Image (cartoon, rainbow, N blue to C red; front, side):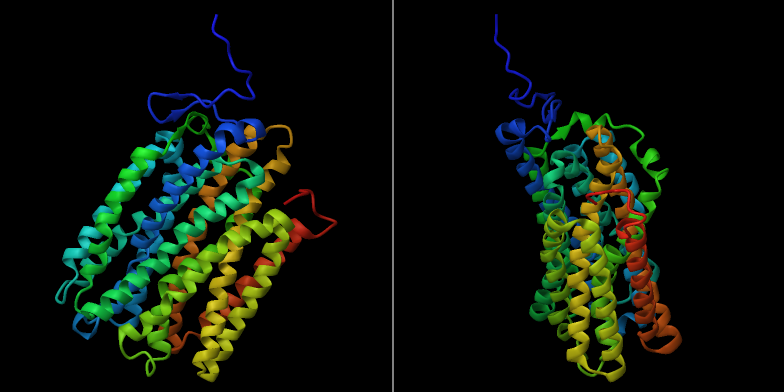
Amino acid sequence: MTATLPPATRPAVTVRGHWIDDWRPEDREFWNSTGAPIARRNLIFSIFSEHIGFSVWTMWSVLVLFLGPQYGIDPAGKFLLTAVPALVGSVLRIPYTFAVARFGGRNWTIISASLLLIPSFLAAFLIQPGVSYTTLLIIAAVAGVGGGNFASSMANINAFYPDRLKGWALGINAGGGNLGVAAVQLVGLFVLATFGAGSPGIVAGIYIPLIVVATAGSALYMDNLTQARNEKRGMRDATRDSHTWIMSFLYIGTFGSFIGFGFAFGQVLQVQFAEQFNTPVKAAYLTFLGPLLGSLIRPVGGALADRLGGAKVTFWNFVAMAGGASIVLLASQLRSLPLYLVGFISLFVFSGVGNGSTYKMIPAIFRARNLHDDHEARRLSGAVIGIAGAIGAFGGVLVNLAFRQSFLTYQTADAAYLAFIAFYAVCVLVTWTVYLRPSERSLPGV
């Protein structure tokens, strides 16, 4: 008779190739002996694929810098070119979250990474003087597929890690993906400095072999979790919970700011400080810095939330973001570029911290609401991560539209900065009222 291992030490069973049907991350013995190495491997390749997805999604933050006078596009038209991929990416995050449960995390990562080839080839070969604005809008819209990768990646990694490590794991996963914003801007800077503003297609072309590597790595080294596939109706049930919409609103303030400013920063510099940034390469030297710092600090936000509580970190972070936006507004009125850069970079940094802390709050909220059912908490939090990711990404659209309208109406971005300050103040109030006010607080540990 063959001996069987007790449940606590039985290794994960893989069936039908890359499908794991026994996954117990909350079981510390299982996690230490079996789970951690598998989760770590999946995290590494998830980060790489998501990183490339972010780069493709935000590529138009760089490509608009190549669109000189020969393209005949005014600043308002350029802001629309960056708003369109932000919009498409935010919409796609909902079906991408569903896709993890439908196809499996590994399988969908292969598909979603492969789809990045389409916008990359289009941008590599079709952007040149004489191309119609409609064609540029279509190419920009197709780049939105890169925005969906974040939602599926986060939902997938959320299922792999135990609650005590979710803040760290989700922060690392998202931060590594967010670095794609800074990376594509560094690529753009390299192309501008080396080949000049007449070669936008090279930016996209650089990513084609990287996409192939991401696809192959996902196919060879990632896994699907059977339990994730079996979590049906999670999205439907999550939409019925008020905390889903509250967290989505707060995520507009953090991730919406990060991705919106990532798309718009270079253009704002060129328009608002035209005398200092009269060539695209001068703006490109600075545009990567904010997204780079915001991405690197996102895991810190998750770790702080693990230690201090997500709600507390999120509350003070929104206070800091309101302060950063106030500095930007003052610098704009004083025409002070150094002060402006300090304020704007602080907005990137604090948005990164807030991204980590708000995503830590989501599993904590649903764990507190389902104290005796870990599976239910994990099922709902995975769905909410997808919903909040989609709605938060839509904040990037709002940021770019706010800049566009402010420049159209007032020839300055000051009205947009005032709107940002007001929004962050509302986020401070909501966080305090729902999650921190002692008389109202019903979710300890959030």
